[in-house]
Image 1 (spheres, rainbow, N blue to C red):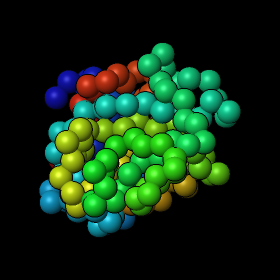
Image 2: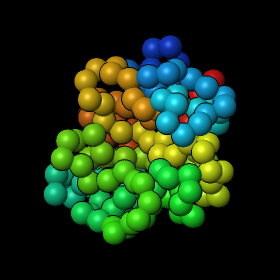
Image 3: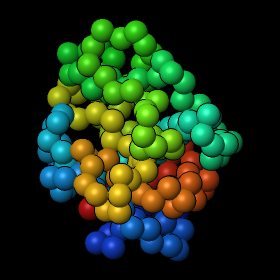
Length: 164
């Protein structure tokens, strides 16, 4: 492990000499992640993408991509585009990236089950804003908005996320 790794600890995520309180999946940590189980997958993952809401904030980092009204993420194991960014209209089950709430105002995507996804092994493992302090997620890792912005500015594609 290096200071440039995002490391999940009992106190939160350690990154670049700081520790940020974080929320994990409502079902805890699992090595055998499955779609819809509410667990955060154990393992060494990498940051793969960064998205943001341009109508609500400035780009959190130079490599960030704006979220538009038609941006979705496929969560349907039957979809050939399972666990990837897709655009509306999309016939399979999906999550909207452009939400009414601020949950996905900044989203760091991970390489969990990506870029070649195994159907049913889980999708959309993101780092995003939390609903309220330490409120469990559906499997993602969530942060206070200012903490997530700090992380997004300093993380880069390939930054390791270690979930022991």
